[in-house]
Image 1: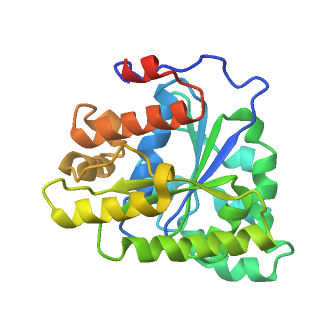
Image 2: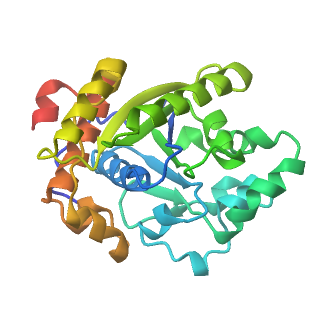
Length: 279
């Protein structure tokens, strides 16, 4: 991790407000969890304090960071239904500066259980209020569907990061997600907005990828990050070792892309100068 070169302003978290970002796409298999894990890791490597909340019942963000779900008694499910404070379920990962609120198999039933709970759409927001001052970035890895879990994430978040696979129906799916965000903004969270779109599983040899990229950039302009995430075998292998790709093989093209994405994100927010980003 010491070789990861993303400089930061070094100001720490004192007096700073947390940046709460839901990583969401209603379509599965687009690199959503991979993006959440590796972007969170890259930001932690830059000196940011980061929390990753695994709100997907599949728990891939948790296992991808080496968390054994079978041995976890405290998890984000317990915080959602009020059995535990979120501070009691957060665990440190092997990545300095990166903590996780892990998932559990119980999350699969949370969609039904939350229906009868008061203020069911804002349970996560209430939980995060207690700890958000401890982190500069809080990422929420959402399930690939717009149910109560994703609704909780979008009510708690300030913005949405959308990983988008370069495929034929990409724009159609992004349009549906945008409409969902608009509805949530009107009813629950007036400040919610799309922070950015990250093009994933990109193959520069594929004309369809280039065509989709051009269409997405035309429609969403500067909200589409310049950095694209390529298809990469090493990135796919990393979760089976319980490691982010940036730790598993920092020199592979996918890991380097996520490092550049983190630098671009920081630069957009004024936390990184152009010279530092190029270092």
